[in-house]
Image (tube, rainbow, N blue to C red):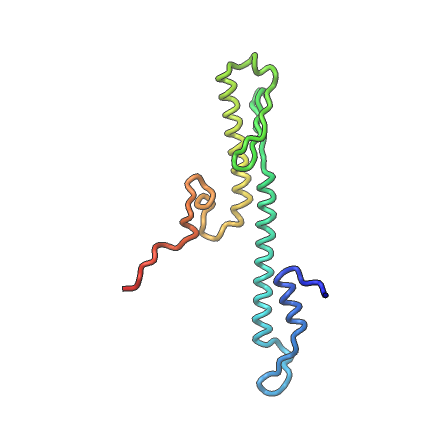
Length: 161
């Protein structure tokens, strides 16, 4: 059995190459593109664009999954690593930190570094996803703190009078 084409554009190309010539309305074989050929060419082009968008989206989501950032305090005593969605992946403390800071100061330093790391990861995520957003839909409406599903749904539907 022959190998199947991998995507829509390749399948359309195979169909176009294997289709018999369609006679024109005047009884001659058509040398140019028929309406069906033009339609298939348009569909093939659209399929190619869709495949490019899907590839870009997959690549962006792979990068998102691997996102992490480590923030270090200026004195080097506290390092905090945060991953996507603010998940804490690691805390490193210089052994001298216990002599240099009180427990509350240490807690504050950890929280500060976690906040900085989370902000850095969020900004990198924004830079990855913004080019993939639908035109006219701001990033914040989908991924912001107050995100809702409203951008995905039309307004209320009123029945006709």
